[in-house]
Amino acid sequence: MKKFEEYLNRRRLEITKPYIKGSVLDIGCGPATTYTSLKIENYSGIERNLDSVKKLKEKFPLAKFYVKDIEKERLNFNKKFDTIVLLAVIEHIGNTKILYKEIKKSLKMKGKLVMTTPTPFGNFIHTILSFIGLTSKHAAKEHVNICSRMKFIGIAKKYGFKIIKYKQFELWCNSLIVLEKI
Image 1 (cartoon, rainbow, N blue to C red):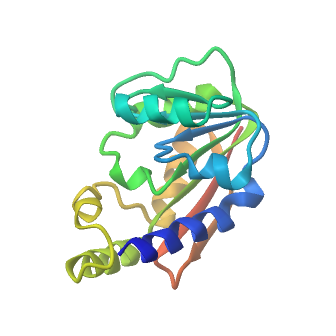
Image 2 (image 1 turned 180 degrees about the vertical axis):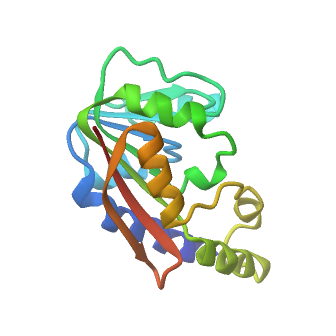
């Protein structure tokens, strides 16, 4: 299972790399692979677990890390970012209304929101793969927000973004979505 998930993480980074520029806020940063793989100079990461953030701060003293529950808390940064990243995160967020508003406030004008998420088809495949042990069963159960291309078009319109890129990858199982603040 670990090798397959490592492959998926590398693939996400490959597909998003061209869109991740400048100052970066990585929401749901996990082990900060976006930071380490893309060698981002001005990097901030958000995780909801205090112990994880403490370890990240020790391991990567040049980056900034914050503990936040993005479903309930405001981002409240005293700066704006060029890029905000949510890689394999949005499908785990039940209440995205606050999040999209906070992201828009935290982006510079023409700043980019870069996301990857399973397609509805991909979520179905993920569920099957988790059943046979190739992907995390825990993660599959946490998928509460599966978005189609049409749903992202609606999100962009509702929250003041324009779609720069929508692309399916990994045999139509995952989506890359790049939104620009307008």
